[in-house]
Image 1 (spheres, rainbow, N blue to C red):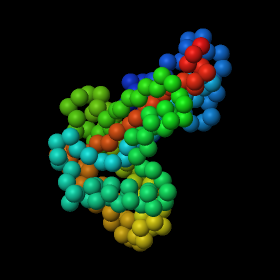
Image 2 (cartoon, one colour):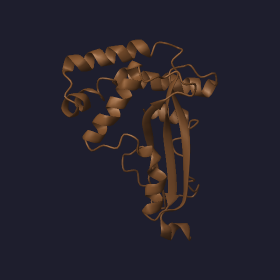
Image 3 (cartoon, one colour):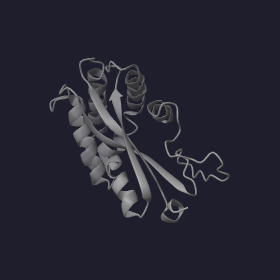
Length: 184
């Protein structure tokens, strides 16, 4: 996921304007470089869509995604926090809040070279992590059996090999300043 985010951001680790003369930066293990004056948050909107209508309700991937979102909500997890980051930061009193949205294709279907690379990394992380981020949610919160989840994952893997299926979701990067820092 780190490499995928780095590729999405054009090789950068963050987008917030860190002063060149910054002497102290607090990294709390988030990988986004949260520091004393500026804050940056990176998260996703995991609702899968397609730019050309190729992802239909009857596709295994769409059914999976709908169930994943349902299971996340049942577990008390917001699966699409990227949509709310800007509002949450403003509501918390941050100033000069900036939000950027990035397309995360699944696979190498985009014509654009950069998006093709992002899509390759995203495809890899989904294929490698599918069971890891599905089993607990589906078995504990939706009542699926282990065998049922294995079948779902196998169907998604098979379907995602179809280059005509153009799945994507979005990455959000939002940053801003603490109120007292914005006035200095």
